[in-house]
Image (cartoon, rainbow, N blue to C red; front, side, top):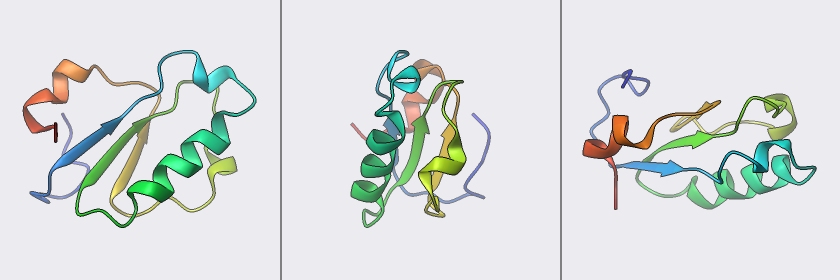
Length: 82
């Protein structure tokens, strides 16, 4: 898994809403709300948004968050906050 957070040892929260949500009209709202809910938490956030999401619609992305079209959960599981 890339070191997107420059060595930050904070726990990793992996947020995913499945492979269909990104193609739904509510996707931007769902992702925006999820990022807002996590923004005050002492964690790094990896949010998968699919390939159809216009990231510009989400507004500002918190510095502790990264967005990805998709990521295999097992690739990052040793670092996940369960």
